[in-house]
Length: 366
Image (tube, rainbow, N blue to C red; front, side):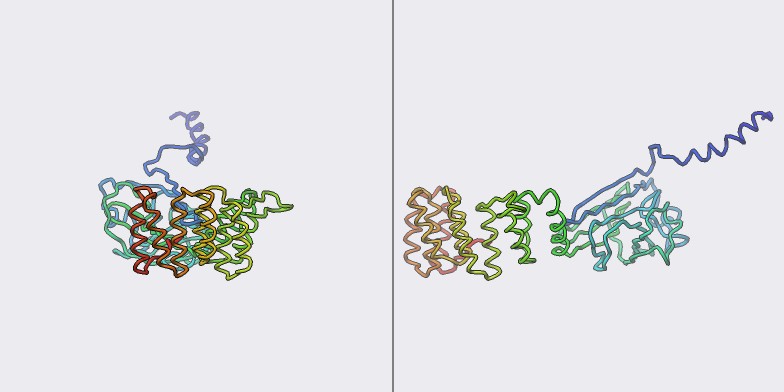
């Protein structure tokens, strides 16, 4: 190499080295993966690079996965450390972890695995993980046998209302850990936040939030405030929308709160929205579920004067007699309606008749 070329190489060399660190998207052997799943209202996002097995004994080869933390933990993927983000507070294997983003690192020891969630998450691999200062939470789990998986993957398994199992799967092994949430707390807090945004203008949002609390028997006093907002609207009554749906929700909440006075006025307000047989059916069933069979009987009878062919209202009338302790009258009405009941509902009607005869009939759960 002549002197001129050598000097040119020396001058350019630092720039060549620096150019290796850029933001260009270059194809990688370990492809980038970002996956988000929602547990109740909690978004769980895992960001990782997925290496291939490539005919290696990955779980026992220390050149692939460091063993027992020697010399470092494993990044639970390739390239940058794997990160897991939780949009709300969660529990990992029943241990609390605050909402946020965490670097995910693993120390294997045979079939035992220490899982570490590091608040210092922006790291290349696990090389500079400070085991004393960076780790927010440690949990211990055991590995499981799984179907062969060439590419490292994270699966979401065993779903329930408030929990899911996340499994790191690679080759023939799965490392599972359970993520759970305080369902009522996280959902109600999410409602409070979202109802201050664009949803504040939609009666359906206020109704659905209140109905969820009713279904889960939680936060009922605040749910009553929310359902009133659905009915009455916001500032100066803006977006008010009283209807059979939100009045039904309100009535059921008031029943739970043992507020009989306001319950009766709410039922009365709902009757003006029964303008067709199906709405009348909804309201008469509501009265039965609210344990007000006399009101259900009177209402069904009045509606049948308007809609005499509404066979389902006759069934509700018969059921009302049953809950008033008048079994013979109930059976008479139900047997009379059999001839006008559509064939696809006859089996259910016959079942109701048998249950009333034996005194075992119960209303379907909402």
